[in-house]
Length: 99
Length: 377
Image (cartoon, rainbow over all chains, first blue to last red; front, side):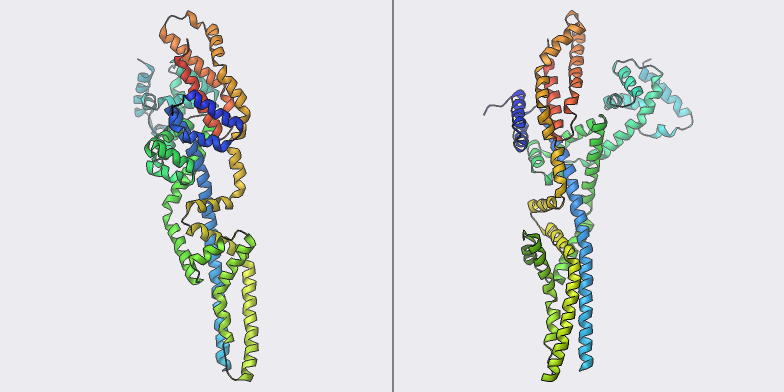
């Protein structure tokens, strides 16, 4: 397959944008990355980096917050378990006293 | 004696004068101006909202600095050095190893790393980071956002202790509740939230089944048994009621635990990210909006017109600037550069939108304009 010129790649990308298909436009950038001039390759790489790092930090923060909440909940469940075990001890004691 | 040498002399004099705290803040003005990053000082001044800085940048670009500018440049040197320091700190985080870490949530960026190689990708990022740090206010805001995100990622990476602790706590919890991974996964994979909650509840309650049964197996004589059974049965009801009451209050939290455990225990990245996306689902519309796709789509006719209009604009510029009457090649080249820089500046507002696509198209548009240099006659 013949390598496309920068101008041809740019025109194709514009067509995809015009057609309103963002997913295809993004795929086009990664599929043809090495055909773009090096300077543009670097810019494309940076754009994906920026998006990945900012989004991922958001997701990681959300996960961490959620995990923290999970630990707190587990602590509560453990307290619940202890409470129930105490109830059982009272029950056993009453049983022994009645015997 | 040139201006830089004069400043060198001025610097020597500074050594003999009482210490100014600003002098200590990074490389001296002479070092900045002679260093590899001197062009970024010009960029910083050019993009400043301060008219004094802008005028200084113009004089700098035209090689028209005078001695009076020394104190002005010194004033901006401190800010320049602070930015360089922030860049340096961030660059230390942009290693080939770390770019893979940054890519773990983005198959697209992962693909790019695979194509370019981690070292080249890291270098590309470093160059652009510098451009952002010395760019206009929007660029600086992006720089700050990226710096914060990278900082968070680094913190997560080094936060192994708490993560291991969390995993340990989860294992402990499994044991206490006598839950197997399989049981838990089965419950957590239930699509319907109400059913999922119910399954989780049954799993946790299952643990207490043993407690409830203990009282019912007590046996001494029929009369006593009936009495005891009734009493114990009532007691069992109390226990059930206690469980019920406590469980009711914990329903939402139990459901949360399930999600958390599922996220952490899951070995599959895809599922982990899908879950995390589910958790922060409300942010997604914003994120999509922030890619700037719709904005760039709307701007596309204007961008096309700008691409097509460059030859016409060049002809107009040539007439206005008297290009054809120039005989010196260096002067002609300088005029071409002036035209191209002006053309990019003139069309800058077409890429003012925030997000991925504005950046992509601004980069491509500028690269295409730069490419014209060899074709201009």
